[in-house]
Image (tube, rainbow, N blue to C red; front, top):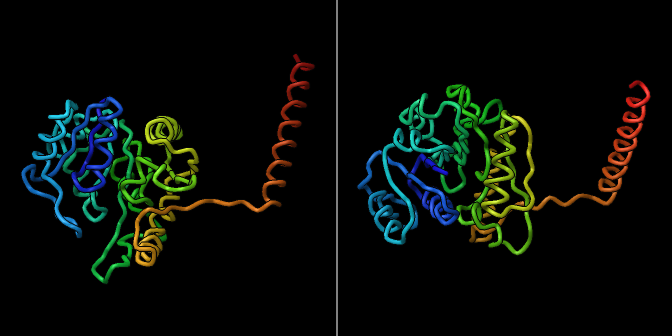
Amino acid sequence: MKIGIIGSGQVAQTIAPKMLELGNEVMISARDLSAEKKEDWGKLPSVNMWVAEISRKGFKASGGSFADAARFGEVIFNCTEGSHSMEALQAAGYDNLKGKILIDLANPLDFSGGPVPTLTVCNSISLSETLQNVFKETKIVKALNHLAAEIMTNPGVLEEDTVLFMAGNDAGAKTWVMDTVLKKWFGWKNVMDLGALSSARGMEMYLPLWATIYGLVKTPDFNIKLVMGKKSKASSAGRKAVKERSLVGTGHNNKRRQ
């Protein structure tokens, strides 16, 4: 499968090798293919440097503009900084994204006030929703945004199984992303579909808490584990049993009507 990645930073350069290892073709993208990417902890290779290095290992990797990556990819990853996502996707082109699944990993973070960010959009709308409102014919699925880059593609880094959240408006797109990308390719066991893309608001609002925890534990290698109470488990099992009995009864009634 051809994977188009909008962006070339740490997240893009983590997603891309995993996709290549799985046998996909990958194109990452940037405004300037020769510019090194500056991060707080140092520099990442430019797109041209990264492609040259990864291609020497025999992988089918390439680099291009945002529009090139959007046109190339059968599935698209938005790995840009949230403050630049709209501009980047507009450069990618509406028609190049039309009808495709776009997995949105971006967060609308503003670090101008210090290490714990504020959000440029929140409460009544999310970054993912603002993108969906413009790119109406693109199937946007929010996922992986609440994790450090390494954990996105390698949940085994953590000592216990944790939960991965996702959201989106297109049921078919979510099913494919969950079953193929998140579970089969990346190895996530526990994926929770939070529902419509409006749920991306909470997913993005978690990031200031994530940054606070990171500052305390001094490592990005952590995630959420959802632990249910004993009464909740019993209640859930009871509801399931009632539903199953109801379905059986409905089947008998249908047979009698036939």
